[in-house]
Length: 409
Image 1: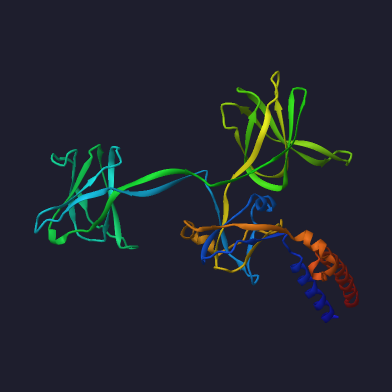
Image 2 (image 1 turned 60 degrees about the horizontal axis):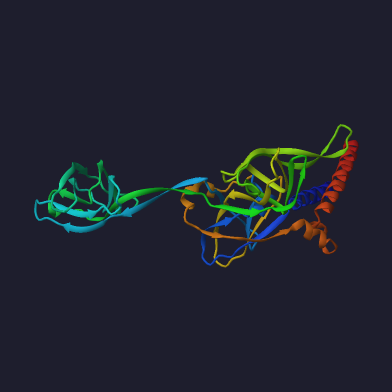
């Protein structure tokens, strides 16, 4: 009896494990180089995930799960670049004389700081900064700049910054005082420029299935071929040079009323104002839809014509270590899965950066494939049959357990 129960419990557990499956899978575009890559998530994939992105799993050709970190574009990001000035003269003094270099401020803008890159050095020196418009008459801007501890334990160069009063000279001279036998090697001189850049986005167009007018209200139905993810809606309208119209965006949901009847109800997801002097781009947060309705209040005005409606979102990626030429799959569509806990998450800052972006290919619906191939499947490939067997086995185990208790009693 104990052997029978052990076998039944083992079968029960194995069936329970196999019953956990994904609804969708998609091939990841092969890469020509090994290393970390950004797998760009499409609106179709994001529209079919469980919302928390906890059901995304990457597998290699052998079926081994691959760790990843999620990267999301920011609305705006700051990028810093080092811009160099042209050095037109270098002079290295002898014995106790000073050394200097002259550079051109070709930016055409006043500056109040500069940075120079020097090879690691532990010597102590001082510096003077002067400015000129003709390279003949020089005027001191700052003196006694302390130059010391200019070394970097993580590299062979060090960046030193000097701040000074705002100056618009066309030429600058940096003079380094001290023993010429203890000279320092200044590799380049310039400034750090911060640029604000918009985060990368993806977009797609809705199909305008219908537009009709009822009691001074335009009713527009927007559809997609499948459920997709978006964060913002952009409208392009025509019909009037100047307009300002209130509009409501809603979806239709099947709900159950008090009589337990299935009824179709409208659910408002946002109210907006469409205006001719704006770009008519509106943020709705994370949305996963394949059908949308718009109501525009025309009042006593002629109806507007909705030329185009597009959905946009900030790009999202899975950053993973992929080998060149190897096949990888992304599987998703499982509401019960929690976020994976990978070690790689602790090294996110070291991994993210300029990495190659790879695309996803055509999504496969595993449920529909399961249905089509049902006649050729074994019981371990049919989730509905598996759960039926699990239920039968559970009842069987319960009956045997009751009998055993009675026998022991």
